[in-house]
Amino acid sequence: MKEIIFIVDESPEGGYEARALDHSIFTDGDDLEQLKANVKDAVATHFDAVE
Image 1: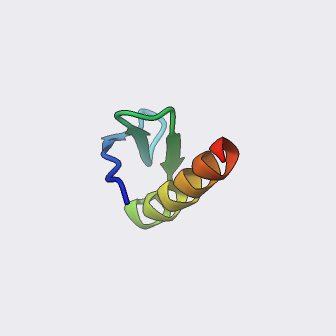
Image 2: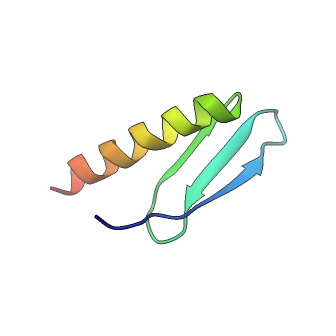
């Protein structure tokens, strides 16, 4: 399994944004718990689309 590193920033509109360094994966969330769930979903979706 490969490691994917995300940069997390506070969003100007409120909440948080996350983007992967080496993949075209981007997501956001209202709080860190929602962001974590959205990151997991975005990663799964990204790699399902690649296969």
